[in-house]
Image (cartoon, rainbow, N blue to C red; front, side, top):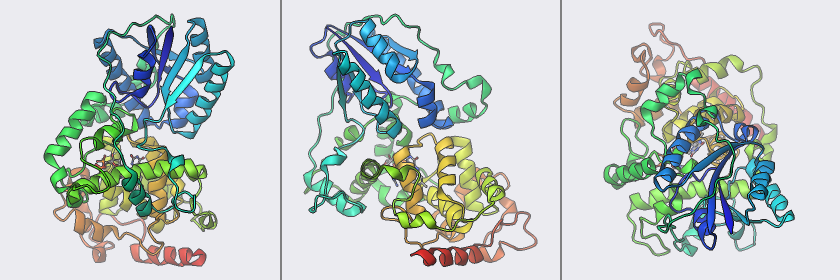
Length: 460
Ligand SMILES: Cc1cc2nc3c(=O)[nH]c(=O)nc-3n(C[C@H](O)[C@H](O)[C@H](O)COP(=O)(O)OP(=O)(O)OC[C@H]3O[C@@H](n4cnc5c(N)ncnc54)[C@H](O)[C@@H]3O)c2cc1C
């Protein structure tokens, strides 16, 4: 009896239910990553593809150490797997579900095609802690607000099994397909950006666990407050590892005694609550799939965004807005493929509420440049800030970037780190248009704020 394991965004050996099930009761198993160029370029931004390429290399080595070959094969997702499975007389195909809507469509089609030729298809939900369909409020409706959702999840929480990679010998079979070079996924030679990212990140399952350990040692004990400050590393920086399934929320949460009447301290619970924000975004995406490009709150469909905003949008992308903390953050993103959560909120608020540029434009840029770019978290983050999502920041909450900087980067450690021309920026809001400053803001914060308030209140 032969089985196949198909990887996508579950690039790990441990806590991998598909692997454990695929070797249980089967004599031989093969491990495949199917590179469908159209599928991957429609679901992964450039930074994602950089991570994916490195992560695959690392997974290949992990499997090699176990005496197993990872076949990295190119082709159309459904037809190629069906072809490989039938040619090799495979009885069952196993995978962990990928929750991106484009993958859901492919996986459903794959199930149908395989079952049509009597090959079993088994899929598992390892991306999330619970099945979104099973979590409903007392009226049988999906939750639309985070706090009651979290309260409910906590009240019913029980730790899922954490699967260890099997210790028994795994026999494999050769699928007789050419493996592609992973560099086809992200051609390094063509991209200098890669050198920058290399300096800051090491993808892969082992690195994910190192990052978790470092966070536990250095930052968890002050997480609730420390997570907001820009000058020090106060968060886990686990997001790209979670995005590619190199570590699971299930594994992380198993390190805590999390249950309905837990005794976690405020920092531990706050960290778990952030993991549940991730759960909540997948939950919303599942129940309201239109949120990938439309506002959760549909009355904002008619919001009056500015027109002809290309010049300002490009300045925002390049970190040339003249607002110090915004420019520093956009540089952090470009240099590292990551941006601090606090500055994600500040830059998103500036784009949508001061420049009045549609949130979808910012979401698109983040989707291409963030290593952790994630369909559920990114759309929720943007909609939250721009005021049209679930639990949205109310329309009248417009971050003042100058005050935010004073509060969360009081010694300018972050701004100095990411701005070579720090000295050319103004220090205070009153000073922004001072003629002695070399850099002038592209928009007046007060006037643009009032304009945004007027447009939002028109449809509230
Ligand atoms: C405009 C905007 C866009 C965003 N886009 C993304 C994105 O594409 N991908 C992404 O993973 N996160 C996104 N976030 C959420 C958040 O900024 C990042 O998850 C966080 O900064 C990652 O750093 P960390 O791993 O150190 O977080 P930690 O504070 O250590 O949190 C641990 C984990 O919890 C989850 N998490 C934390 N905060 C949030 C949140 N607000 N919403 C959902 N999950 C959260 C993440 O998986 C994170 O890795 C976005 C937020 C905003 C405001």
